[in-house]
Image 1 (cartoon, rainbow over the protein chains, first blue to last red):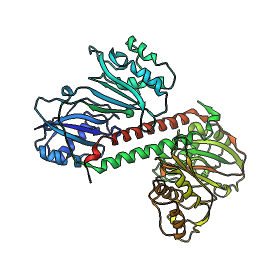
Image 2 (image 1 turned 90 degrees about the vertical axis):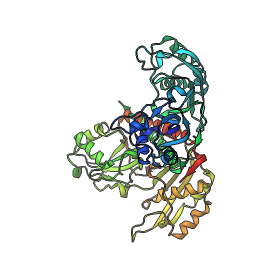
Image 3 (image 1 turned 180 degrees about the vertical axis):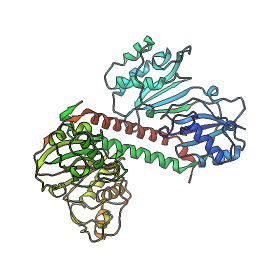
Image 4 (image 1 turned 180 degrees about the horizontal axis):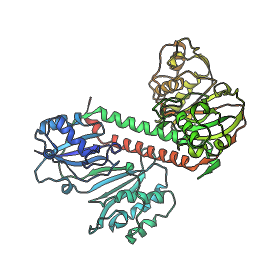
Length: 270
Length: 270
């Protein structure tokens, strides 16, 4: 039986979503967990597919995948208890064999979490230029012959819970590195290095490629799928691990910032 | 010639300050750097001493050390360019052979950086109970026969630059794990799990030992030394690395927090 699953994962421990031999990937860990809970015998029978490949370090809140467990009951009941705490299944739905997440998913939404306070109003003004149908070849490592036109339906910058800026962008599909490229130019705007209008100019130029923002800030936030999902049981270990990660990271940041003010700036040399 | 040096280091990459074979330590890296810049030939001739040993993960802003370079000029001019970017010398002073940082340093100050917003007023009230002469055996893994009395000259909790609470505590000397133990009880107070008066009661009980706060938040902040120090040239790489660490950590924290709100909390099970 084929199932669609809403999948979450924390990107920091993975070399991306797609299987690679000898690397820790979301697909690799997922297939292993399915074997260990008796949902399938091997990678081939699991038939793991995603709505969108994510790069090394990128997280997902509601990624859509499909799998074909030989034992769907066992899969639904126990997969979350065999997965490592940085991957979790949120919901599932039974689907027909012709369901492919990549084609079934409609509008995809990504969020980018920035690490510094910046000029949110200027970033929001810049983000508005992304909305609409544009040639985004200036924002992607383009494969030859690929259509560079994409339709961005939403692009907004707002203050997240921590007060730091968050970029949210929605489209039916994105080019490779496109969101990180957009986030990169928003950093330059947010720091006042370039005016918001730079986005408009660069969209028109098709050539210049911005320095993409680091992968860790990027989250596959959501994807529209015309399915009625049922919830799956969760492990508290997942939340504990995420909360511990957030706390440890905030301590690291505070300590590094405190050390920066140690007076060494007075006598700097390259 | 013996030199006193004001030393900074970022704790996250070290198994503590003191040399251990096969582990990355501040002392080990410092001696290696001195050999590579021609300041001394081996660990023995370097004669590395600190004002206070720091544990794995603990940072220092102004740790005091002494060394005896065979070639002081070379040491002063070039040690910072041979050290890895997570250790740096801030200042130096020529001292007599009978100078030992452990005995020469007066009041030591530590800071603890907390990772969560908490009730700073309650923490401050709790911290005030630490000031004065107390038996701190309830806050340390006590070695038998060691004097548990310590004189805390200052203890304050205030909002740091990020708005998160910072604990600053000064004393002539501390017991092992004492500051992390104090920080641990301040967490319980700051989260409202226990009233500020708990500190007073626990100081009186001498038995109960609080759960110490994690090492990463602790910084050896300063030590009074009756010396006139001269500045040493710095590498910009140190500041770049600290700034990059702070940024990456803030991104990790924001991403982990964003993923926590993915709706999985509705169906939790151990």
